[in-house]
Length: 619
Image (cartoon, rainbow, N blue to C red; front, side, top):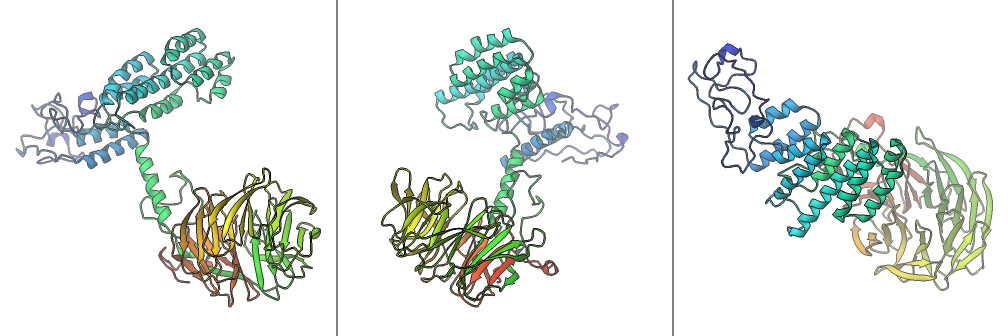
């Protein structure tokens, strides 16, 4: 930018100042007109490289112009584009937040930008110093800037601008009031409340709350009740962050804007990473990603590899389900047994814990109680019995059968752990207690699958009319939620209760939004006929979906993608059920008609050196 620009390390005598006698490295950082309040874009009357009041020979980087020896003249600095100026301001704000004030001064000088409007700088200073009268006066100047073309407001009408000014004044006076109270200046605080806050006629409920703080006898009591940091830099900085949201970014940048943009970029990359399976964290410092590279998770970290094959069942395995705490796995089989497995917390290897026998028709469905104390086992269509086991003791607590004509094929626990609902395709739909006593019943509902809502009031049931309906046992009301065109073989619901995953005969796996009652996505690849196959949500944030298939495979999809990201092979017959461990998201189980249960996990450590891209679809 200089015709014969000297580096910062050049000796002073090599760059004499204009007029001679001065140091060639003379700085002008202390001069407000040339420091961070340098002219912004759009100021046609001012020079881009510094304020017009700066000495003629001084360059915007704080160095004086070279003359004499080389006879070189200053070249006009390149005018920054609008996006470039935005980037400079963002960097400047971030450096300022880090406490690098001198660096900010130099950056603004050399770029010819300014970090914020002079009125905003003055307002910031008065707020941070607690000069409330001056800060209120500054508000009038800032209100005029809210009419500027760059102002970001919901509506340009005068009324909204007036209300925004009132909001800002209210926040300012509230801080003033609280600081007076903390300092023990109760009379002055009362005067602020009566003569300044109340006449604003804004947020009356909040004013009533503020008036109650007059009764606080100690500053600690005041800070606790007001949920306030107390007088000082922290609370005033928080106040400034709130006030900034009412000002256009051309006047004052939103707080921590660069960090916000970086966090959004990280979240976008994480969302696009097909195999990302770690806990979400909004903090950049805690996020397991680097800003220096695009984020890519290896497929080797995903549960795509057979870790263990359980062969203790001697016939088809119809169901598998991890306990809510992830420490146990229950598997049900046509061989009339339920096997409970213990999951080692360190190695994630499974060992047989208990075998529960006596289910004459086989076990086609299992449900853990909310506290994992009990396990309910159901049989196939022609089974009229239900078994409730105490998993800790291995004892059968209840064997329930209302009638030999019943079909009890599905069950769901109430969140209180004291009740459950059960039913089947012959028209039974019961609510019972832990001893099997009938509490309520719903006549004529041919149940295929069940789920209890988190509030414990509504039960979702899929039926033979290709729908999922909501039933309220308290006020005896029901409503239609999902309607499919083909039989619903099974369904499961996400932890939030918002999404439902349906296995639909001849169609595959469908994702429904229960709140909006719309079909969100149809997942491709899986072979689903008229066998009952159970799919599941999985991963740290339930970002993934897994399902068995009649083509002997396990399919895994990212929730937002219709195409599978993995097809797991190893079973030799239909895969009936898949369960994802809720505590260790890198662990998954699948049950098959081949009589085995496969445990899937990350690649062995020996193979971890083999890098694979997220786009890989190798099985």
